[in-house]
Image (cartoon, rainbow, N blue to C red; front, side, top):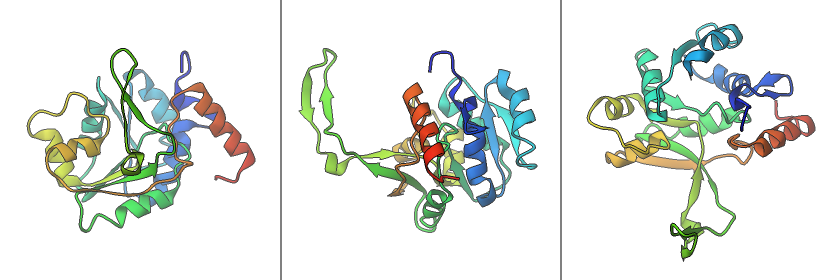
Length: 208
């Protein structure tokens, strides 16, 4: 995103993080927002008025550190949902579908099918193999977990070096993680193109 802080970028009058927050705030008991040290004051000023019970905490060097800090700030809850603020078009239905699976699983992850052919390449960019995309999906957030296994995964022993989502951490420890249908609207803003697409969708569709 070069010089643009994607979570504070504007989308039809609200920041990316505001849209993520407002989409889910009415469907959870408490919210912790994890930010960089230099963003604490702004988060408290802009976000806290939207959700009175919201707490802002400082993240860590790696994603896993930030999630751990957020977990420690939560009260004694049974279920935790971890959401990327950079997915501002999330719909409450995605969260509800995940919560419905928590009676018989340790975690639940929204996924969407892959439509492109996926190839594995080597360090020189040469194709090693073409993967069977029928058995592959792309994971989204919010990812929903039983609080105890998730807390224990972060508190006990070493965490994986390259944890890209929390489901990966639980998977590595033998917990049962289910999947459920995500939403094509719920894409992650990573590039300027993604940001422009989100702006276009918000101006042409009744997303909110």
